[in-house]
Image (cartoon, rainbow, N blue to C red; front, side):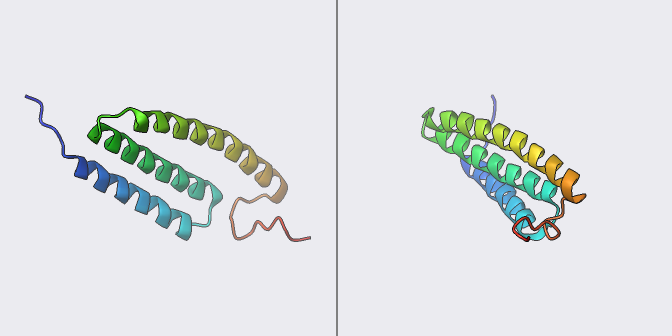
Length: 103
């Protein structure tokens, strides 16, 4: 008989992944690492949506995950293009050294 894992464990893992991503966004200065931490946070939200959807026996959470994954894919494509342009123009992708509002 397959054993089931309680839903609270998935929510705890999701909270830990989200917290690690949030700390990474606040602490790190490399734009690519910050971008990866944002993707980690989106994955944690997806795990939460799937867990709650399974708990409620509903497909609403699964549909939301597909939309979040679509937005994350578009964000990855646009973010990579922005990073390439920043690196070509400024020769760095460190957040502290990039100031686009300065004349």
